[in-house]
Length: 155
Image (cartoon, rainbow, N blue to C red; front, side, top):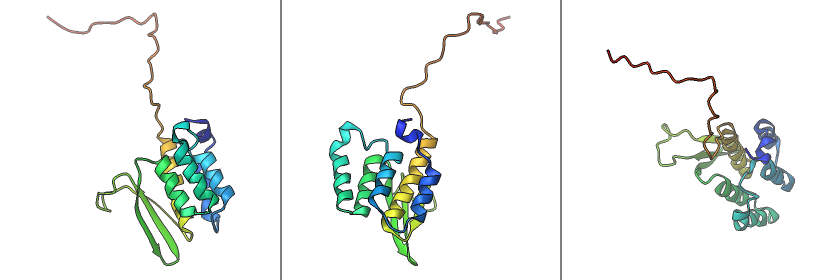
C-alpha cells in the first residue's frame, strides 16, 4: 500500500463529498492527495497534467472523469442519470453485463462532479481493502527442528 493510501480514510472523505454543496479546488486536491495512487507517478505525467488543467479551468465533471480514467483503468462509467434533483452515477468493471448481474458501485449527489467522485472514492476504498502485493510473498525458511515424515503405506 502506498503512503498516500495509508492515510486514506474513505468514510471521512465520502462524508465530506456527501456534505459538500459544490466542488472546490481544495476538495479536489484533497481527493487526489488521499485517494489516488497513480496520479503522482512519473509515467503518467501527461495524464496528470491534463487533470490539473481541467481543475484549473474548474471543469469539475471532466476532471473527475479524467481522474477515474487515470486511477481506475479497469472500471468504466456504467450509468449517469439525473432524477428528482440528483445525479446518479454507477461505475462497473463489467459494463456489458445486464444490470441485475453487474456489481456496480453507485453514488448520488445533487452535483454531477460530486456524484462521480463519490463513486470514485467508494471504488478506491474497495481497492484499498483488497490490496494485494504485486510480488508473491516468500515463505520463510522452515524451522530447523522441522523434519519431513513420509506417511505412505506400501504394505
